[in-house]
Every structure is written in structure tokens, then in C-alpha cells.
Amino acid sequence: MSQAPVPYLDLKPQFKAMEASIHARINTVLGHTGFILGPEVEECEKALATFVGARYCLTAASGTDALIMALMAYGVGPGDEVITTAFSFFATAEVISFLGATPVFADIEASTFNLDPKKVEALITKKTRAIMPVSLYGQPADFNEFNALGAKYGIPVIEDAAQSFGAAYGTSSKRSGALGTIGATSFFPAKPLGCYGDGGAVFTDDEALFKKMSVIRVHGQEGRYNHTAIGINGRLDTIQCAILTEKLKRYPWEMERRHRIAMMYNEAFASLGAHLTVPKVKSDRGSVWAQYTVLVKDRDAFANALKAKGVPTSVHYPSPLHWQPVYKDLRAKYQLPVAEEISSRCISLPLYADMPDEHVARVIAAVKEVF
View 1 (cartoon, rainbow, N blue to C red):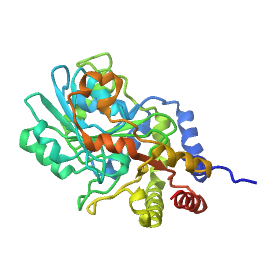
View 2 (tube, rainbow, N blue to C red; view 1 turned 60 degrees about the horizontal axis):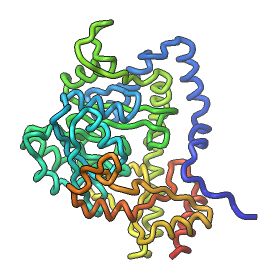
View 3 (cartoon, rainbow, N blue to C red; view 1 turned 90 degrees about the vertical axis):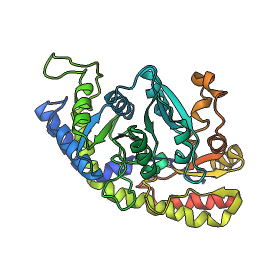
């Protein structure tokens, strides 16, 4: 009898490990019925801010809303430009366009897949209102360099930490989420730290920005029915905050477990040479391994061969942002060879904190058999 396929992601073991405490948290909210901005929201925000080393945190209804709140806090709108990566999930560029501004795409580093700071400075103009690097696949981008550019030109740096919440960076006490002037993250269920629905958060050390985003999050409201700005309905439900607070307690173990699995993969695949390129994490930072993404020459053949062996894969992301149909008018403007090549070769293998060692071994064996 053939074995069942290895899950790409399985959240059930995590829930079973925390079932009693999760139910207790939810039942507390059901008991007091403060479903919107209940006491668990502030509790969660304080815990998240402490974890990443930020002075302030505001939870948000999604990672996309978190990015919108960050850009709105700086007044980004029509006629403005925001420099960002060409290789990310669509929301990174979408939020810029949604506010009427123009995304300006820069190429990425071949080794880390993150925005290349060397490619950014030449793109800065009088219209540039922000630089928005993405900490892709769990590893922070080069924020020392980006923050230096921001200081040089008086431009804020917004960290899109949707995949990297809590990753270490250098000798700083701050973690990913708190590495720019504002950081935005996602708590989508499949993220390293996920809630049980859509969710996100913004982080900052700037009190004025915190107050602006607090107003933006509730329809631009300061005091009941006193609207001083245009805002959004960006609140995260109390139940989701209660769940996140409980899951955060387990998160350090999960980060370590993700790292251990990634190192098992790296060690096993090191001998494959040109057939498969393993992900690189720079020596001065960590990764929370939101994805374990490798490069292969023939992605479709590789994926089909693994599927036949019961190992699923996923592609994050199959085309760079400037190739998306909605940006067809921008495609001819950009020549971004690294992002274009990486998007044609990248493929992700199963990795999640509660992944059993025997499933890790099956993935390793299947990959080695392919080559």
C-alpha cells in the first residue's frame, strides 16, 4: 500500500497541542462579548510589540490593511512613488496602487531573493515617498542599508514583514517587524505566526505615527463620530487577538523547530550542487522560514517528479510583479533580470513547525531520488 502524501502544511497538530488553552481564550471572549476592541486586543498588541522590540503595535484586519495603514500614515497618494521589490506577493504593490501612487520596482539579490539596496538609490526621485522592502520567505532584508538611504534622503522605510515576523537581525534587540520606521506583518493562518483567519499588525517607535494609524484604523475617528481623517475599517477581532496571544507563547519553539528542519534540508541537499540551489541566510540575521524555497532548472519536471513520490510543492512566486497583467503598461519599463530568472526557477518544499521528522526524511529522500 502506498503512503499518503506528505502534507505541504498541516495546522492540525499545532491546534491539538494548544487546544485547551485556545478554547479557554475563545470562551473568555464569548463570555464578556467584547468582540470588537475587547481587552484581549490591547493585551495582544503589548505582547507583540514586546516580542519584536517596538514601542507601539496596532493589530489590523489583515496584512494588506496593515500596509495600507502604514502608507496612509505618511499620506501616500496620487503623484507619489514608492520603491519596492519586483519579487513578492501582489499585495506589496497592490496597496501602493490602491492609494493612487505608483510602485517603482527594483531588482533583487540572487542569493537571498530580497530587494537589493544597491539597486534602490538610483530610483529615488522627488516623487519618492517611501522605500518598502519585503523580508521575503522569513529573512529580513538589508535594513541597515535601507535605513541609511532613508536617512540620507529623508524618506521613510516601511518593512513588509508579512513572512518574517520575529526574525533576528544583527546585534539589534529589534526583530523583523520593527526594523523600519513602520513595520507591517500578516497573521494569515499559513504564516509562521498565524491566527485563525485574516489578521495583521503594524509596529513603530514613533508616537505621532502610532496615533495617526490608530485614527486611520477606525474610519479616521478620534472620539465617537468625530472623523478627523479618511480611514478604513482595519480592526482585528478580539477572538483573533486572544488566539494570537496564546500562540505567541509557543512561537519561540516553533521558530527553532522551523530552523532545525531548514538546516536538515540544507545539509541533505548540499551535495546536489548545480541541480538544486538551497536558500541562503546572511550571517548577521536569522530566518523564520515562512517558506523553504530552492532553485531548480526545470521547475515543472521537478514538481511532477516529487508529486509522483507523494511530496507536494508550491511556487512563491511564478512571475515578478511588473509582469502582472494589471501592470502591463509598466512591463516594458523594467529590465529586472534577477527577479525574472528567480521567478522562473523557484519552488518551495514542505516546512512547518509540527512537521514530523519522518516526513522531513521522506521529502529529503524524494528530492535526492529525483536527481
